[in-house]
Image (cartoon, rainbow, N blue to C red; front, side, top):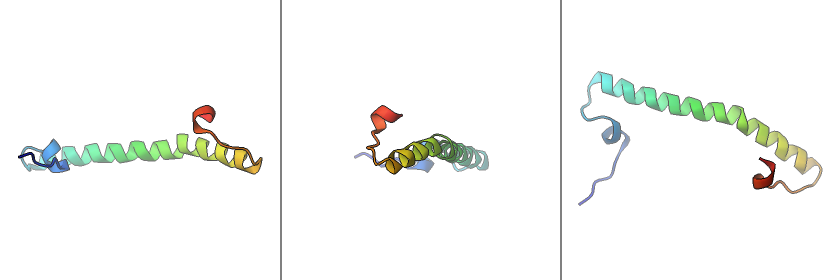
Length: 65
């Protein structure tokens, strides 16, 4: 029987303080990278989309980005 992998079991063998801090640090870095993407690449995409929408043109992700 297979078990479901959770965040705790994926990164932490034992629940020591250092291992929990490591897991939390990884999660913090992941969230920070997602926010950076949202504010940089995402902002560019939203500006391009708004410009196309104002001109009543179709925004094609594959061609525009």
